[in-house]
Length: 396
Length: 182
Image 1 (cartoon, chains in turn brown, purple):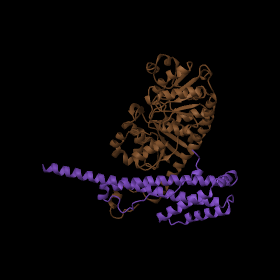
Image 2 (cartoon, chains in turn cyan, red):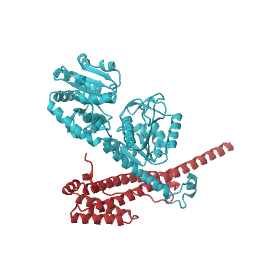
Image 3 (cartoon, chains in turn red, cyan):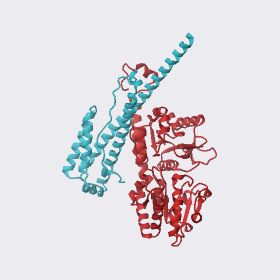
Image 4 (spheres, chains in turn yellow, cyan):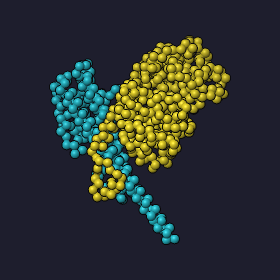
């Protein structure tokens, strides 16, 4: 099958949507399909060979966080060329309402389109303003996928109709086989907590963790907090109490390998996100790596953790409750092990081998519809159709 | 003075012509999406009925369950494709027949039988998943068509011509025990 996948966000910076696109593409390639991914990227960024650059990406504030997007006539032309030369059986557009390559691709493609909605908080104001313009191209989508129940609710509220829920996938084995790194492992005196993500983005929850740290340190003075991800450590440190800042170790952006090893090594992995998470793939990665997961009780996180069976939950945006939960877990190795084992089992349901099969079923369904249309009606020009309107045009 | 009236008149006509042509093309695209989705649903329903027949005849089920399944499946295969209401009832019946026949014991028995039972069950599950997908995609397309056809401009200019107003396809297609479990 010839599959074209469109990512609205730049591959220069990692993010949930980009990773989803990359993994899906690599899974289908490994199954012998032809896959081409169109994404914004600077021309000098090294890209995997299945990725085609849609042009330079510009940082833009959109939907509550800064995204690197690509737009403009030059990009539109590149999108058109990609669609034309790809001869795709199906084009899979991610986040079709993001003002980037996705919207442009939606305009350019004429054929079976599958769209995946990731976000659970579309800005209704922006959506309403741009709606008359977007509506007709959204009607070209044959199949809508939502990555979570929350994302699906967003689709039904804002766009009407429905969407099939197919969750994000994870290569469980990649994380499960990660080796621990001794310097990240906790000891009885100096247990370790892990945090991953863009630390300067408030909704990733760093402020909540910062506020919880003094409480944790009062109970367990030796605790070490390992923080991995892009961002300026000083901006985080200066908002912290002195002893809290001293407990933090900043690892900077880490490779995929190190991310898995960090998750496998720490005593507790904390996800204090305050909102905007429609899915929480990081939790599944953490569970795959046999981490003990402690997450805020966002609906998406609660679902992924199976209501708390596969990881501990604390009250969202409540540093005191976070501190209580961290301390309780760090003092109870049996409970930690129990959660880690349950989490590893839970992660299997989200493995790409399972998830991609569902996506393939969607592709096959829309392709089946298109080919039967093509054979049953002859090509009809807009004007030909117009001239017959009102007389006998009937359903072609 | 006169000339400017003529110019604006022409501009208006061009605008109307564009609106009509654009609206007609948009509706045309939507109608063919509905048709495509409907033919997919037809195909998937046939596959599901065939898979059910296979399950009924695989020998791993008791005779009564097999008979219920076979009867529901052949009703589906013989259904009049033009009569949507009766088809919806027939397909709901087939879903319910599957639900009744695939109780906990029967499922365990089928799953244990790796030579025949498990693969047949797998085919039924896959077919039902595709029916669900096809029905959902069809209903999305129908919703879109109906929304566009409600627009006053579209109604006034009768851009939809005599194309029938499509209906959503409503029947029970939930077989929770065949899901992967969540």
